[in-house]
Image (cartoon, rainbow, N blue to C red; front, side, top):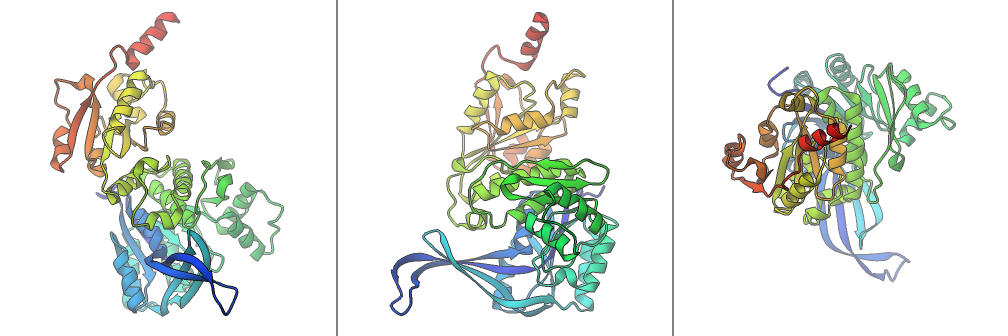
Length: 464
């Protein structure tokens, strides 16, 4: 594997400039029965594949390239300036920058205005060469189709088809876009898109359940897997050689705008990291639910986010870290095996959470626990340990590391505080010097005497 460890993400798709026109309504127009919005603020942010690329770039170890048509106008230049942390491979763009303007009054959308475009790519030899080089360097390709024509351009489709034969391609389709190229690792239509895609081929879609839609589309598109997202109902996946997989969504109330982009970005990142489909989809469902609960795109780009302590559970460690830093807060991390959760663990976690604005827990993988504790451990697998920890009010996010100590995971997260149980007192932690290298501090916490996983297991064995 390359030095990038499989984390160069190339996003291909259509970009647009999202505008939020914010104000209040205090009167009705005298010449028509229409509310008058007194504009207080205008926010601009990347939309379409631009948002998808920004979400992928939240992952600390991901290197993100965006291949997209970009107009050579003032709005296009503003759009590029907003894509911080993303390398842009720009294709010539037909017409002006596509803009979507939502007019909001007192938090409610009154109207959406679309202008610009059409945004169809008009690649020349130079931009095609740059796109080819970008795709050749990818560890995973994420196609974010917003219907402007990028996925219908024949030469770009050839490049994407070539990429699908070499690396995983995750394709987030659009009703006005081109069909996924053969060989995609994963295609992620929502329920309406799935039904529309089958109907366009004169196939009966109305009577099919989501998992049946996914199976039909997988065969139609010659894809490794198709995952149909169904909002609050979760996601339904059909994969080669496997029974249908249902991934229930965590209950969330909020703005769903951008949830599909969040789902696709999380799935692509996890596929790049592990190559495994089921964990990638589980993470994608969690992240999409958390995205909705956090206010969607409006919440993500809001200049003054709510206190991190009020953020919903289920965010990834990278998202938690980004939100804490955006709010000027303190990020705390702690770590361990957490094999059999007991009162000593709970006390340490609560104390660690009290040191800052959010707590990320780094846990040893099953293989790491076995190396540290012996062949009989862990007694609880890492997925269950992770799920239990996520359910605690004191824990904002959980990450699993495979090494014997958390230094590599800490180097990615770079917390302000690294907290450990007081049973380490008197011994220098191997990771302490690393944490201090970026200005972080190490804090030892009181340990509840007499509580340990080893003693609990020994006591249980004695009673057996």
